[in-house]
Image (cartoon, rainbow, N blue to C red; front, side, top):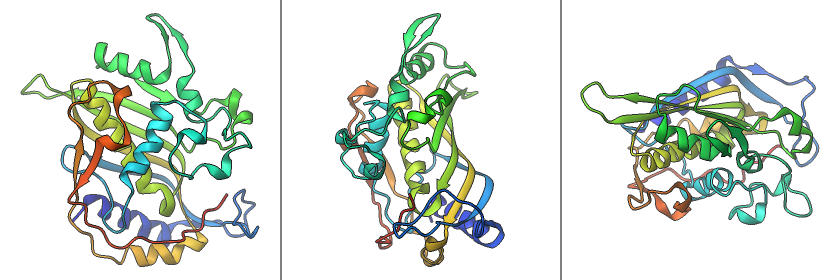
Length: 282
């Protein structure tokens, strides 16, 4: 069975059985009909995935690997805040009349900063350090920039990646590990989407920096299931997990900026039927 399915099932069961119900609290999100969108939540959820053993895609339902990769590249590669440069419509609710989401996500990744070695944006700094100073404990990104929050149409949910390189004792091969910090996570709509995105990112960076992938750790401050999602989650976690798929990344690509959504595949990806018409709180 897929390890990612086990992690997801255990997390959802724990949230539903032992989480905090926010009904009656003053909450920001609402449903399309204006009703407050309450949640059951757990604080401080930490999930670990060994990418050297398995790619963490759910089989309980399908995760669209090309679409989630496309959004990842929109942020990390294109460094864009323009939804016209994104193939999907997942950001439409947060875009202005020009299709911009403000100084959020990709915009922050593209801002250049001055370092001793020169001017870098956050992505180029990560790649530079992985290639030239891989054992540094300072290889990280942060897009939760307080002075720009008032110009963001949505505050970043997944806001920080920390990279850490280890060396195998019996060889000179380097292993790339990463921690994703997320302030808030809609478990049904976005949990495995984010997991797959940053697993792909680690695979991509490892390939272009001549490393192998190691552990991906997902740290969530507020992991929540919305009230209208609970019946969907209950149905989902009753399904029998299937074998994990194999991940394929185009081995010809050695430059991070050459990757496209078509350079990733999940081979042998068998899943249960998709859950349709998931309501999204905004």
